Length: 156
Image 1 (cartoon, helix red, strand yellow):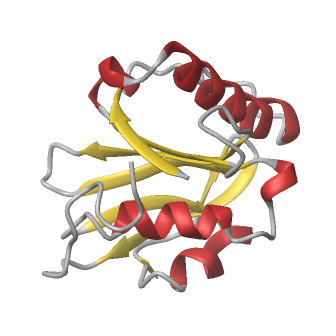
Image 2 (cartoon, helix red, strand yellow):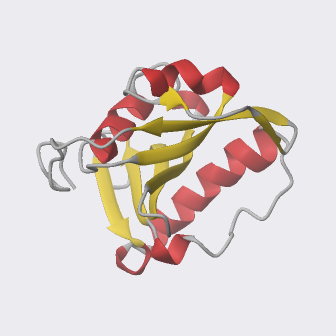
């Protein structure tokens, strides 16, 4: 089941589980010691998915959507749990969030995940860079007029 909410509208359990997944993937698994709680979460629209075995099912994936000062929308903190990788849960969540955005949409992709984002219409938009010891590329999806309102067929 896919969910989305602003930080103030998330349940404490949902917030805990989203932050726990991000820390498990980025800080522990990828060994990137950085400030995961960076001050941008209060201004973000958070998206997460849970296994279908009830509202408290295991978190499968998460991401956040931010409005940038230059008028673009940024998707970041895209993560899937180890158990959900390869199941399509991350792609379903990413697609549901992206379907609500008219763009342009930007993100910083780990090079190893570049193909995933290209499947959603993103293209490399500048030179590669190193972030916390992991090669990244900036990516852009140009504006589109076919956004769906949040809470459409994917549920909330």
